[in-house]
Length: 210
Figure 1 (spheres, rainbow, N blue to C red):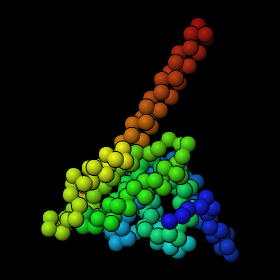
Figure 2 (figure 1 turned 120 degrees about the vertical axis):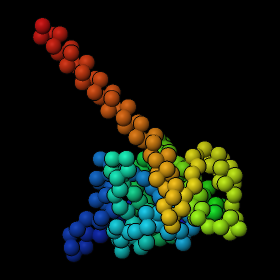
Figure 3 (figure 1 turned 90 degrees about the horizontal axis):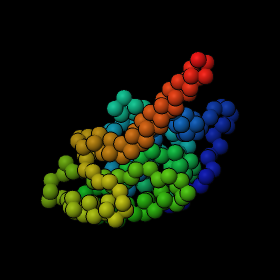
Figure 4 (figure 1 turned 180 degrees about the vertical axis):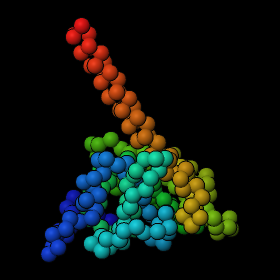
C-alpha cells in the first residue's frame, strides 16, 4: 500500500473543493480520529456512512461529538488506491488500529499500518494509538485471536488496547475515549495555560496603571 502527499484534482467543471480537502482545512478546530481498518469486511464502526466520496473509492469521513467535543472521523478501508491519506494522518489526534478476533491475518496486518503511520508522522508528535479487537460479539469458538494476543500486540507497538463490537457498538466509545484522552488533556492544559497568562497580563497591566 502506498500513499502520496498529492490530493486528487477534484475541482473540475463544478469548481467545488474536494470534500476531504474541506475537512482537512477545517480540522484545526476539531479533534481528528483515524479509524485504520485492517480487514476489508469489518463493518464501519459507527454503522453508517454519513458521506461517501467517489473520488476516494471507499473512503468516508464524518464528524461526531464525543464527550461534548466535535471530532473528525476518517475511515480508511484496506485498499491500495487511496492517495492523499498522509494529509489527514498528519493532523491525527488519535488512531484506532482495528483487527477482527476471527482473523489472524487482520492482526498480522496491524504492524504494517502502525509502521505506515510512523512513516507519515516522522518528525511530528505521534498521536495516541490504540489496538482494538473487534467482532467480540462472535462466539468464543470462532475466535482465532485471544485477548492476550491483542494485549501483546499493543505492548509491542507501545499502544493502548481495547475491545469492541463493530456490530453492536459495545466497547466502541471506550476505545474512542482511550484514543482521544491524551488530546483532550493536552488541549485542556493549553487552554488553562492561555487563561493563566491572560490573567497575569491583566494583573500586570492594572499594576502599571496604578
